[in-house]
Amino acid sequence: MIEAYLTGSFPRSEGLVEATRAAVRRRIPSSDLEAAFRSDLSELIRLQRDAALDFLVDGQLNWQDLFRPFSKLFTGITLGGLTRWFDNNTFYRKPLIVERVRFSNAGVEQYFRSDLLPASVPKRAILPGPFTFAVMSQNSPQTSLADLVDDIAHALKDTVDVLHKSGYTHFQFNEPCLAVGRTRGELEIAKHGFEICAKANGASTDLHLYFGDVGPIVHLLLDFPVDCLGLDFYASSVDSIADYSFQKQLGCGCIDGRNSLVESPNDLIGFITKVRDDIEPEGISICPNCDLEFLPSVIAEKKVRVLTETKRRLA
Image 1 (cartoon, helix red, strand yellow):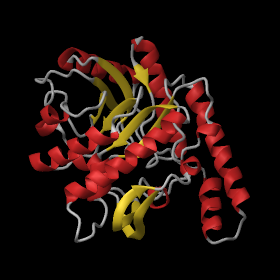
Image 2: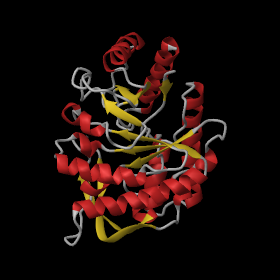
Image 3: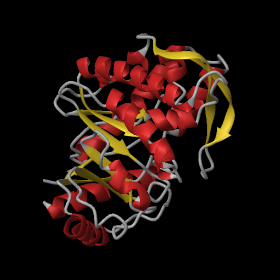
């Protein structure tokens, strides 16, 4: 069976963007921002249900970037300046590590809105991977990269434990930094992090990589203790990973989140057939290669419907 789902943040409406800016400037009450957020989330839930996606995500519609919520959910972090997010025209606030990172057990429900997601469909929580979180932060001079990854991984594990109790069954860790020229030593540090944070009782865990070619390191990634590897097939080729025994679920990132051209279901079916024949993974999921937030919302919605049509025709 082929599954289909979204892999990251979804474009926000102009109304939610304006409400967010107004709330930051304290021009509107928090209740108005919450109403705008709920309106966007309701539309995203409707889109996912109409598209018959296998898991629901909340689209991270009230996250300013992948790390910002964790300056509140974790202790030991303050916010730094704006920094470019890889080679995209978007930015994030660099986390500044000021002391040991710990889970604070406060405010999780503010950023993971399980209360607003229907209980009848499995829920997928999307989090930063511990290695990318550490590399994209400004670390303190007293802490090594390995120690910071370890601390963040423990904090993420505690987060996952809380989310699992609130109804999330699938956890996706986004690790774009692992796909960009990493050494074997760095990959061992990252693997250790996943040995900590990917141990959720009864939950499924995914490692999702994008923005880089994983062909040279896929044999190492296959040893990570996760159930699924999600790969960006606009950055990695099928041929570069076809020689390895892929005894995991493969998240096939075949919808391009950085290109407004809407894919053809016919082309995707041919590509996924090649993936299935050449790589022979334990199972295949189809998904975007990265967040869809880089696209206009109308284009993002069309790409979601392409996922649906492709899955329907492959069934």
